[in-house]
Length: 240
Ligand code: PGA
Image (cartoon, rainbow, N blue to C red; front, side, top):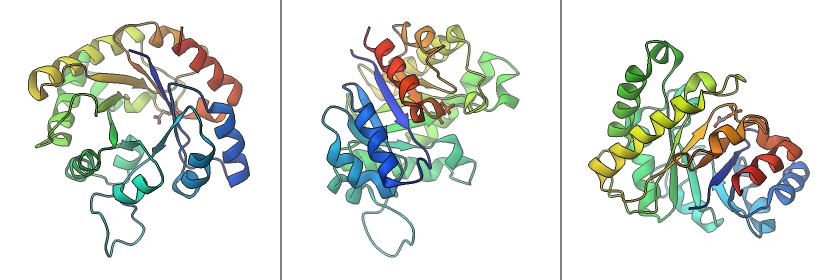
């Protein structure tokens, strides 16, 4: 299966004009562009090959929830993917219970959740078995009572200590974590072909080391997705 590259722009860029320029440049097959909410409509309107993603969503369809955006509303903007449980949101207090409700709401609307899981350094420094226990626990809570359909869930394995630090995981360790996650998904959730991406300081320089591995189904790219030349190289490496 083709590798998927997610451009997580986070709270960037700072104007609609810049967002549109970046979107046109990154509009490639196999790419999902996740701009901030205010730019979703404009970016979605110019994409021809890439798909549109959101960086979060609320679990209820409508009502008195100041500041929230529902999956249902996102669907009207032709959003196909929703990043959920990103560590930057978890750091602000988002719990596994909340992530679980968001995953369920996203699946119910027929959109594809990109569920982010990953351990902090305090766990990883104890070794890979500790990281596996941490990620297993997150997955069990985040996917509790989810009715999964085969193609509609993507996991992004993102060790928290690798995000935005310039200190990417060792690809052989990533492969071990990805295999572990895939095994969990096939045995406990009957997913036939689980897709698991890597995220955390992916750059044009290190992308090949992850994307060349058949077990890793793509990359979630933060910082490098704001640099058009760099991102282009990552996408090229993904389609080799
Ligand atoms: P980064 O971000 O590529 O800047 O480390 C990745 C992410 O937050 O998903």
